[in-house]
Picture 1 (tube, one colour):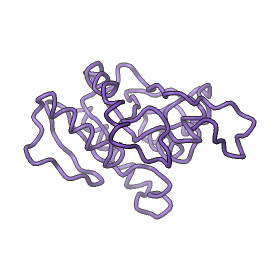
Picture 2: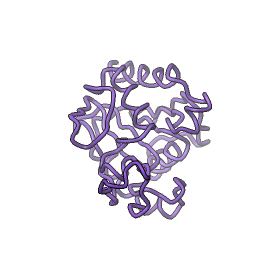
Picture 3: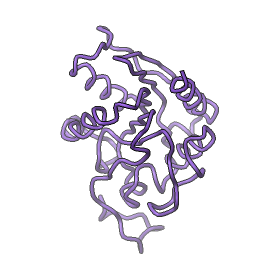
Length: 200
């Protein structure tokens, strides 16, 4: 994917490798996205950095007090996250931004390990159905107390699982934000709920 550059970034080198997770290693909130954006994280080398989805996410995290600034343009822009850690179900930019089941399962061990290491994260915010289903799939395989009937994904859905709360949110993709399916107030409500949960 790093060979197909957008004209605006033609002179820039692209990261073009699996994108590492980013954030506070003592996080109380784990954010799980879909995959690196082809001209965002795949270019900059940092999750949700350099594209409009990231603009939405970091503005919301800043309003909620989880980020020191409202935007993320490059991996060296001084952005710091507090109490949150960002990862994705798939680590490389997928063709047409549509990860396959094979890609999802290939990257699964990384997400499994992060769920294990980040034991301090009592809240998991899954951005989109793809991430939500994968988080529940992993927790079920670990014999966590996932409800027998898998909860249906929707914006704001909340599931208690083995001492953690999984929150579902629409992904801040242009498809959702440009159409009004996801508004800033809707997105803010998720982060406000996450803050309340970790403050209990």
